Image (cartoon, rainbow over all chains, first blue to last red; front, side, top):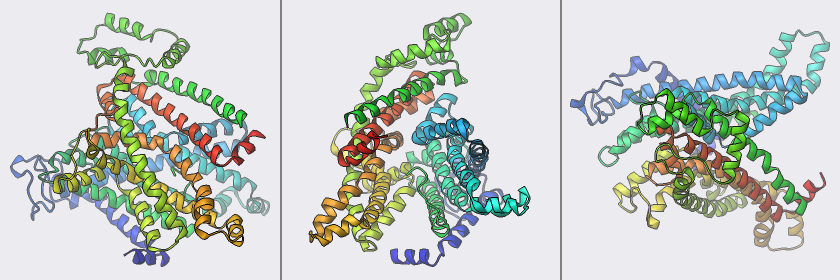
Length: 280
Length: 313
């Protein structure tokens, strides 16, 4: 099995396979209301803890809610908010990082020392501290994650701006009369994209892990909203009688994170991006 | 060497002041008024008079700078205030729970080192062997499994199905096994990977070739020369990850009902017990700073080149 996995890596098949899996997961998330056979939050105690059947493909939970529908809707929250965190921290990081790199001097120094401080400190403690101040809830968790994650993008963009400022091909393009827009489109974006894609991919995995961990602790998504971490939290009391309740959502989290990690690793290998710029 | 140690210890002071500033400032950022939180925790219907009195008691009516200085002085005496919920000093409550958390953390740290050092070492010197593939598979999955889920899966197989270990609680060594494994797996994944990479890098170094030409036994080269140098990034990783270990204990303590500091902190968040939250954040920051200091000193001991380099700066 291991050698066959290695072969996949060598033949560069990991990227299409992982992309396909992620594509399916995103489709599941987007079309959840049409795909789900039942209402994910409709309580029906008559049907509680049912085994899998045609009506409930993966059985029901302790309140008679359809597990399969809840898993589908859970994908919406995990993937959707991970996307939101990714995009917003990317934008903040882009603005701050390019500003710091472009300005230089003390502005750069102060901003980068701040980023160092945030990066050095364990992120989950920062998140928990923020949730401690603002109280439990999904918006707080998402906000806290954004506030922690943007520094990595800021550093990355700053480094790129600095190195690009020095590069000869930028100067050459300027001298040969390329417009600003053309320089950005043809020279800067192709250089920035690969590390960004790699980092974004790994980032999504981490964000999903953190959101589900916070929901599991009861600090993130509140019941009855279907979310994978919260489902494990709810299902844990039935570990003796109905272990499936907590096994399914955990499997979903693991599949998503494994796929994002594999994809990130394969992409970084292909583009030759150094992978350990974070959390290692 | 002496000056390096002094310099390194002095560098802690501004970080300490910053951590104290953060914990003091936290109250003012919170949308919840501490006086209100206190009264609601004590089930007292708040009146304006009582709120004002409580605010005065907490020193919230003073200028921020004075509050800041006061809180530094208090922290130096390990005075983190009084828990809103139990009306006991926070430090008393915390010091009662910390031993359980330390026991858990040390158990899993020991497990992580015992597994990852031999595994990473063997994987590094026998690249592409079966053990190398195994180590890579383990480090990949170890980093991808959410620890709260892993905890329940372990409970399901080893406690419910096989009945080998207790489901939850604290006491005998059997109670420690499953929580430690849960907490150690991500660490094992990371350290194995770190050590393997570091060994592979060091094998390319000229000193290995030189040792070989001197006719030193391969085994001696690997253990006494390569491993000794290669373990350095792993020690850095150990120090950097004490924070991760601390957050890990929160989740593992919740899963296994382990009566430690992490679970107490989560309960404090739900109860809006602000002094406890402040205390946790400050201790986490302190632990993080302290562990980085220890790591630096250990590394200086292993590799004296570091202190010489820094000393001349």
